[in-house]
Structures are given as structure tokens and as C-alpha cells.
Amino acid sequence: MITLPATTDAELLEPLTELHARAGRPLPRASIIEPQAIPEPYRTLLVHERDMTRTLEQFHRHPIHLEVLKRLQDGPDAYRREVVLRLDGSNQPVEFGAIQIHLRQFPEPWRTQVLEERLPLGAILNASHINYTSRPRAYLRFECDDFIRELFGLDSNPSLYGRRNTLRNAAGASLAEIIEILPPT
Image 1 (tube, rainbow, N blue to C red):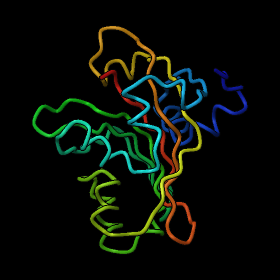
Image 2: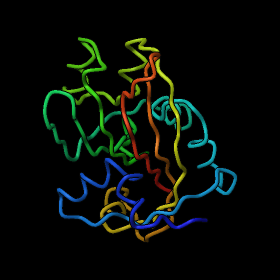
Image 3: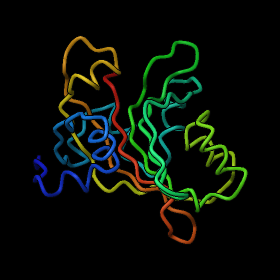
């Protein structure tokens, strides 16, 4: 396991870095981890090139809805938000994420749907039939901090697993950069 150098933390963990900074929260400690070192079921949930919304819905056998915790929009293109994906019915959290969405890459009505904040981005992409790829850049182990522990309703601070992912359209333009962190299963 490689601990992220301080100069890499901010860039690799964007947009989590900026959203936490603006909220006055420190970043959770994170380390890069090799995919084969990720225990199951996290490896199955993280080590792939699909969107997380569909992956989590299939794993949990329930639809997922979006809870937006914080949003920032700087100009017409830079839209960031911290979210929790929750299972319909039980409201169980299945992911904490920080995402930067490049709005100009989304034609209408999909751009409006992103800003309405009712559906996870993966659900919008799948419904829109926008051709995209998912390219994880790094797999991460996070030390659960008080903020994330509370979001997931945990009694302790276990190690958590996640990834830094980029979604790209067919032309190779970035649709979104995402930090995805999973709760204990």
C-alpha cells in the first residue's frame, strides 16, 4: 500500500478536496491500493469499467436514489456535489461520493436533469443513451472519519474502499470526475 504524498492528495482526491475544504472539513486519510488487495465484495463493486449506479443496484437488488449533501456551481460548466446514494425503501447508504460534472458535455434535457438533482448521474447517462466509458484512475483505502462514519451510520471507524473514476464521452471528453467510497457491506 502506498500512502498518498501530500502534494498528490489534493489533485487525486478532487473534487472531494474542494468540497471538504469549502465545508471546513479535513480530508479523510487515503492510500492507494492495488486492485487485487481489495477484499470482496468491494473488489467486485469497484474494479470494473461500469457506472456505480447500475453496479450497486444489481448488487443490492434495489433501485437507488440520490441525496445531495452539498453543491457548488462556478460558472456554466463547473458543477460539483457531494452525494450519498441510498437504496429505495430502506434508505440504506450504499455510496458516498464527490463528483465534478462538466455540464457543457450534456445536451438538453440531460443537463437539466443533472441540475434537478433527482437522479444519480449513472441513471441519467443510462437513460440518455449517451455513449460513455468509465475509467478508474486509482483504487483507494480510506480511514473512516467522523463525517463519513455519521453518513453511513457506523458505530466505529473501519477502513473503507473506493476509487477515483473518470467518465468520458465517445469523443474522449471528460463528463465527470468522481471519488466513490463504499460503506461496509
